[in-house]
Length: 236
Image (tube, rainbow, N blue to C red; front, side, top):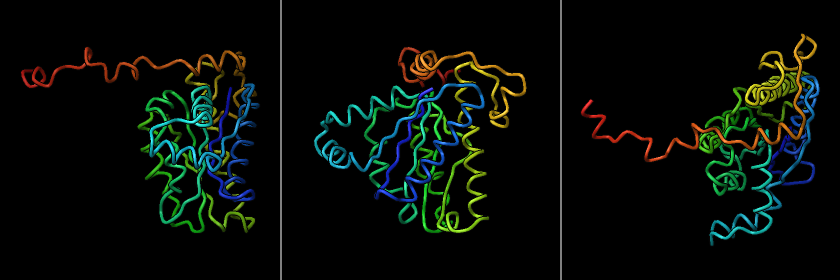
């Protein structure tokens, strides 16, 4: 299983990067508990800022962007984390998703994370990123993770944050396993799936090949030959 984190960390020690690392660690742990072999990769969108701007202005994809988009296509699971400024994820992060191919996330489980100074921004991921990632055909897990300043500065806040991360990570790995027909994981019990008698027999290579497959219903969604003409619908 290839787990790819796409993070817009604007500094080397940002809370956004810390949150991304915590989520990846929890997702890897959930995969291990489900007896799935996990490989992790990371993209910091900050390093692609010039490439993204050039593509937005000229339509030209640099080699760096081609490589990043190829990583997304090859991944089985996506974790996307961004800082929130003025009620929305930072524009550089959303630009990455706005410029990628429309079916880049087809049939891929996606987990949304975000950081901000106040809990008042906690719905930014839901209102901005979830619709965008769903448009890209990603399957976004129910639980999103928002980390405010208080979540890093108190014991109670840290426990609550860790609980949300664990819940979302189990949903992510459970969804990935169910989509590709491996293990017996569920969103409520992924971490204990193997201990409860379930088995996971896939290898990383098998999972990667399954993850690269497209869902026929998605590919055919906009096929003109399969769409009933509007006039015919009115006649019925």
